[in-house]
Length: 122
Image (cartoon, rainbow, N blue to C red; front, top):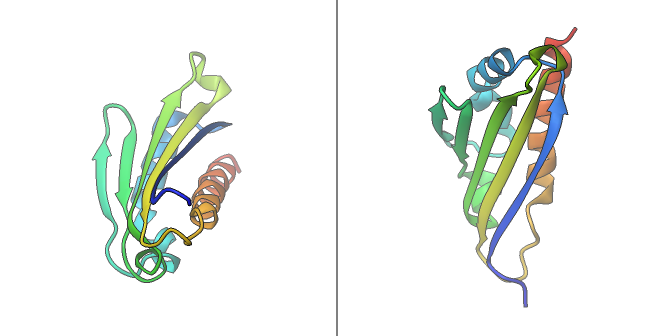
């Protein structure tokens, strides 16, 4: 039997400077995740450490998960001309044991972050 609670995390490099990327991401986060969560996304923004926590609920998320929280941190590389690193962690609690892991939501999140970087580097 699968566990109801789960955590997934990862990291990837981006070309954008950390501050520019973080500002762009946090400015547009609500409209981006409207597809997944029709209710307001609760967000906590830590500007000093460039960390945002999204607590999503509503429609597609609430149908399968009691909780779904994503934390994204943008870390500048030592030489900022080399870009930054995005570190993400997703914590969730499934409603039922037969509910699958939320990889489709995580994929949307990661694709959005990578597309934001591509857009900023144009």
